[in-house]
Image (cartoon, rainbow, N blue to C red; front, side):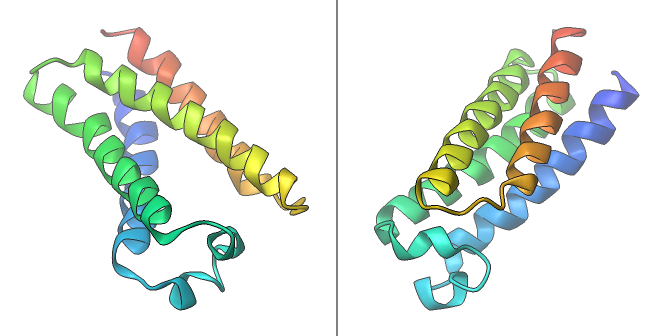
Length: 120
């Protein structure tokens, strides 16, 4: 397995496992200081995004680790690219110009896609 993939995908998976987990267990009031956009989103949508993030994080790691359907890791990485494009659009639509984290996550997800295509 590609060491570079494991480093990049592992960091991306840890980030999304944490961020998605927060969206699943915290209330709107607890999320607001970190994520102002949750004020305009229904909580079921926030929970759904958290679920997608946690499942995507698992999808980056588990398939290549077990050797069962490793192409799912590529699908998870592409999903994170799409997620960050959407997240950036939401931030900009709400007038929030602080999208640096979103752009970094987009770049890391793109690198993960590229690395995943080298071994799938």
